[in-house]
Length: 356
Length: 146
Image (cartoon, rainbow over all chains, first blue to last red; front, side, top):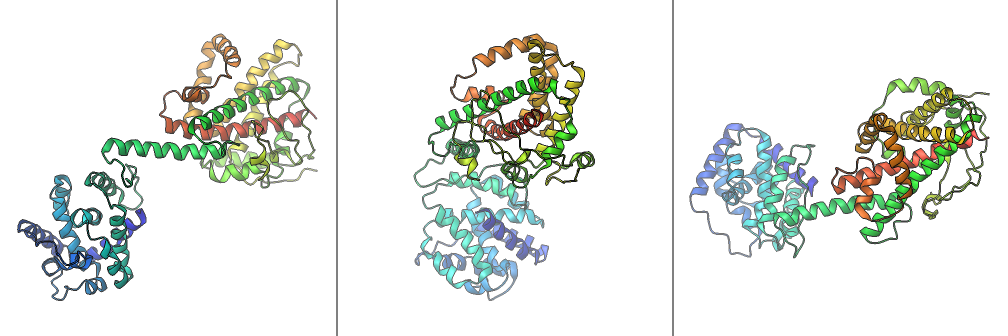
């Protein structure tokens, strides 16, 4: 949904920027004048989108663009987006009368394009508040209009079709985030929530649903991490598995450190040789392949590079064998260098790891 | 005999952890005489374990809440050494009980003061780092025990 919104916003911006600022300011004032006068009644003719466009187009387009011929929807579509935009501004203003805050933002819209983005987005969303019954006719404008306006139509159409049974509460919650998120690449302060058919749309339920969706997404990630969790259904069991996994990992660390404590007094510990042996083949081991590109985006520290390069030399790779001590997990005997070990799942499920 | 092989990722957490851990191990072994008493081994075990967690946490850096918590805990550790030991032993004994979100909070360092979704995030990263840690320590042990 967001790319479409951005597309409309970009088109809108390009259209608006093409005009002189003065004319646009003039246009807004006149639009407000239009609003004060009673708006023409919504067309009874089959409730088409084209009728929707034709409605204010004679008045608004004349005011804004000063061109006499913008009466046809197709014509307006063929021309600049600016032809397209004014009716939407007009419609959005009608809808925005209810929302004082947004209206004040619209009123204060100077020549900055940022403010222009807002009415487009809000209007494309508010379109169905005004005309909710005009969904069926969207195929017509989609078929006839060329690509540029088609995109805009499609985006608004999609928004309309998505909100078949919606109340305005949900839209109000969504318009606000879009205002802040329209400036390409800014961080979203809100989570976009879409109320499906038959679901409650008051603020609390929306927030609750957003939170639940976040948690479910992260649980899915964790399920992929922990081996053997894919088959388990239900959050509680998955959480148990995760807890077991973490516990087993921690106990492995302790066991290994105990082993190290037992081993190292005999061994003159040489970190150079150790790191050398680890250089082996980081490419074919599963862990670096999985971890390093995607997971740790930590910044590059150039200081370490020099030292690492000196230390990374092979010092006779050997084939170490893991002695069978008491374990609480299965350690597969490695066949490669040190970094290319393949530990099986700690809960015994080795399928996930060995398949890679 | 010695050939230069460049690892694919110089600054991955793996290499950073390995380097730090190796350094700390070297330091540990330098200071301690090679005595085989159980007590000595036990003490050494504690220090090695702390060193491994510390090197992993510092390799991760302060970006993660759990690494910050680990480093903070270790820094404040010196004040309560005996207390920590006793609580550690107790934790070792009673750790295998399961039962949901509070346990996860106790397991993941720094997990007490987080909301659940953030806790899940930290858990994911923590699991990845723990796996790396285990893998490298295994490598070291195998390398040393040849």
